[in-house]
Image (cartoon, rainbow, N blue to C red; front, side, top):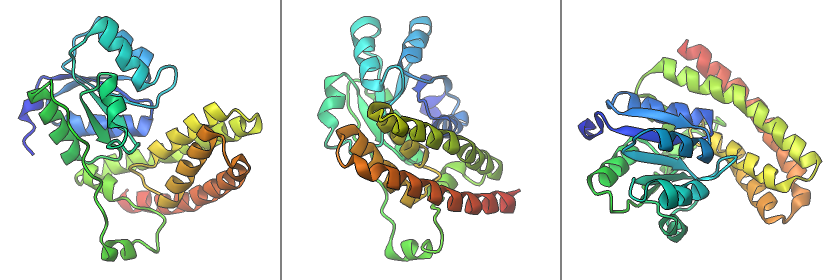
Length: 264
C-alpha cells in the first residue's frame, strides 16, 4: 500500500509493551512519519500537552492510566478533535460502543498486520470524523495449520512485519525472550498475595506480548488467566495454568533460540 499520506505526520504512540512498541515503530519507520512513544496514558497526556500531533495510537490496557481514561481526559481537557485509534486484543466489534462513547475514532484489533495498520491510518487521517472498523484476523487454512503442528511457534505475523529484515526479527525474538521471564515473575508475585487486579493486568500484558511472537498454547493460557483473575472466578485453576504457561515458555525458548541461530 502507498504510504505517502503518512509523510511528515506526527503520531503519538501510547503502548506499554516493549515488543509492540518496536513493532509499531518499525512499521512506521519507512513511511516518513514522525512519532513519539508514551509508556502509559499519563505519559501520553504530558506529551500531548507539550507537542502537536496529527493522530494517537492508544493501547487500551496500560499501567498508571489506561487508554479509556486517557482518551476521556484528552477529549475533555486537551484536544476534542485529534483522531485517536484504539489498539486492543479485545473483540472490538462487540466492544465498539465503548470505544465510540469515550471519543475514539477507530480500532485496531491486535495482532494487526501492516495492511490493517496502514488502511486504518489512511481512513482516519483522510476523514478524521469517521470511524474505522478493525480488520478481521486472518484464518489459517487446514494445510497451513497442519504444517505448524510440530512447532509451538507461529511466526507468520513477525515474518510479515519484518519484510525480510532478519536483524529486526532477531531483535523482536530476543526482546520477547528477555521480557517474558520478568512478566512471569510478576504474575508469581501477584498470585502469592492474591492481588487479582494486578495479576489480570500482567496476564493481559503477557497475552499482548504473545501477539506477534506467537505461542498459541501460551496465548490461550494467558487469556484464561486474565479472564479468571479479572472476574475472580475459578481462581483455584490459576496456579496450575501459570505452571503450564512457564513450561510452554521453556519449550518455546528452545525453538526461538534455534530460529535466532539460523538467522544469525
